[in-house]
Structure formats: structure tokens, C-alpha cells
Length: 266
Image (cartoon, rainbow, N blue to C red; front, top):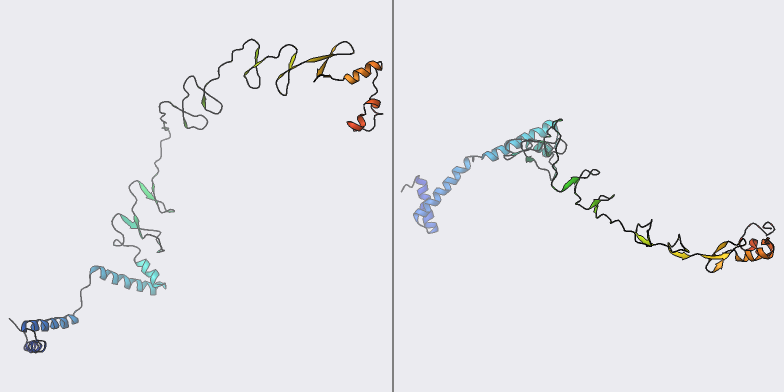
């Protein structure tokens, strides 16, 4: 066993008696102390990553004093571009400003795509179509193109027909006229015809009886609700020999008329 220097042997012997350990253990302690003292005088070799970080820090400090900007802005400029910043299949973000939420590296656009300068997104490269080759639209079976909207719609199957709204409906059967019936022009349905001596009320559409009363000349006058129209006037007409005094008996001025007294009626 080599003990080395003479002074180291003395130190090991003193440690052995002082700490109560073996001579081998004491010699190891002395040797370890020597290695520590030797390593203090030598510089440790830096890793490539640390060496690059130190170089970038120096560049940032130079940019700060050269351009008159803050150290943070200079550090962003130094680390903005470089092959070592972005991983494979990525590229530096041209719109990166260092704000929170932004990505310094973005994915490279795939073939057939380009990066939009406004949105910074990948878009497809437009392909110009030939003018003489119009696109032919394929129409599936049972469908047709709506001439109004240009979209596809189902074909109406027989005997259905398409109405004004574009829907397929069943055609209405033509009503068969039976004796004593007619077609209502409003609804298009069948209705009973009015019997002789009846008329159709234009308001309710029902058949009502036509009631007659004798006239001056012997003609028929219609009666409504059992009371002949103008029956009071006809009675006075007959009694007065063809004259009716409207002002004396029928006071239009006080009840219905608004043109003063009944002298004007006379």
C-alpha cells in the first residue's frame, strides 16, 4: 500500500489515534481532503447548453446598451430565432411578441398549404378551375333540383302532385253532382240547392223562405220576419188616395233624420 507523501502518513497516524479508527480509514480521509483542495484550483467544464446560455446572456447585454432597450426586450430578441429554439416540424412564430399566451414556435404548414399573413394560420392553396369544364352535380335517385332554391328535394310519386308551397299532396277528387246539390263557390264542396220559394242568405249562406204581401198594383212585396216591408206606409197610401204625410206621422227629424224638422220631408 502506497502511503504517498511523508506528511500524509503522519496525518493518517494522528487521525487513527485521535478518532479510534483503522489506519486504512484514516488514510482514505487524508486522500479525500487532498482531492478537494486540488479541485478547488481547477475550473469545471461547462455543458454545451450552459455555454450557449452564457453566450446569449452576453449578446442580450450588448443589445441592451447598443439599442437602449430593456434587458427583457433584448433577451427576447436574442431567443426569438434560431434552429435550437424550435423542435423538428416547427418554425419560429413570425408574430411572436413575447406576450402571455403566445407560442414562440408554431407547426410548419403541410404541403399544398400556405401561412396567411393576417391570421397567421395555414390555409389551402386555391386551385384555379378551367372555365370550359363546369362542375356537374350528381343527383341521386328519387331526387330532383328545386328551381327556386337550387337544392335537392324528393320527387313527387304518382298520383301525388306538388302544390303552390312546393309540397306533395294527394289530388282532390272531382265531386260528382247529385240531384238537388250544387258546388259552393267559396269552399268548393257540395251543398243543397234552395227549393222553389227560397233564397240563399248572402251573410249566413242558408236557404230562407221568401214571404210575399199584396202591393198597390196587385204585385207581390217581400215580407221579412212575418211583417211586410212598408206595410204602415202602404196602409196610409191607400187611405190618403196616393199621398203620405211623412212629417205628421213619421217624425224623422226627432228620431232618425238629422236635417232639422219634417217640413223638409213634406
